[in-house]
Structure formats: C-alpha cells, structure tokens
Image (cartoon, rainbow, N blue to C red; front, side, top):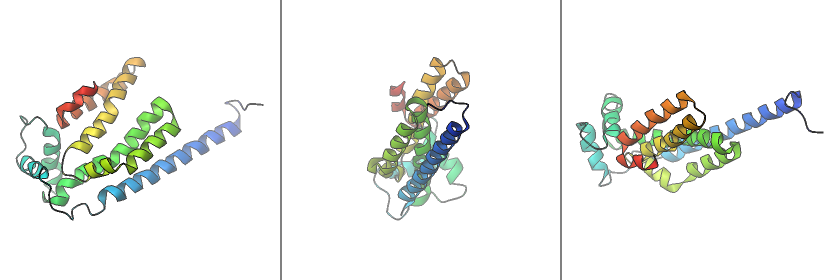
Length: 185
C-alpha cells in the first residue's frame, strides 16, 4: 500500500530527505570553502590579475566589465589592501556561493539528487576552484550565469513576477560582470 501525502510517515520521510539534502549541501559548501580559500593569498599575481589590480584601484563605468572592479573598490579596499589576498577574496566567495546557487536552481528544475550531483561536481571542479582563486571576474560571471537563465525561464513559464525580476536583475549583473554572459539569454 502506498503512503498518501497526508500520511505522517510520508511527511516524516520527506522531512528526513530534506534534512539529509541540506546536510550534504552544507558539507559541500564547507568543502568548497576549504578548497577555494586554501593558500589564497600565498602566490604572486598572474599576468592577467595585474589588470584587475589596475582596474580595481580606479574603477570606471566605461570599462566593459565594471562590476568586479567596483566591488573590489567599494567592498574590499576599505577593509583590506588590494593585494593578492584582497583581490582574490571576492572571487573565492563568489565561487563558494555558486555551489548552493547551482544546487537550488538544479533542484527546482531537475530534483534534489540532480541538484546535489551538480553541486558536488562544481565543488570538486579543478577549473572552478582555479577560477575562484584568481583575482579575475570568472567566478562572478559563473554565479550570475548559473542563476539568470533559469530564473528568466521559470518567471516566464510559471508567470512568476518575482522570479522574472530576479532573472532580469541577475542578467544585468552578469552582463556587468562580463558581456559574454548575454550569450545565455
């Protein structure tokens, strides 16, 4: 006999699965923190990171990718020097935030197991770890690009104005992070 949704044992089972998924996601976020922050400021700038230093010291809106530089100037510079650690701090944070963002988007579209698998693969991705440890804008671009196409899709399909607004906001931020983000539109 199949338990019905009003059956207390089915509700307990759903809550247990949700707690397990939340615990696994929390473990993945902690692992992502360790992998992305380990020795974050211990090596010298790479060649392209010098451009981030230059553009973060004097950010300009006419730059085609102003968002990362503005965030460094207004969020990091008042508290930390714009050195190897200071400029790599936000990309590492964005790289970690991409894990739950990808999980929630994927869970909404394909289910909890797919969301956890996607989050696991992103957590362990050497390319994503590397991009999250560089003082460049790629982890910020990935974060917004993981959200905005699906938010726009859900906003249109479900006629959900809040989701549509979230999609538009994250799309604008993604394009401000790097114009190539518009390709997902």
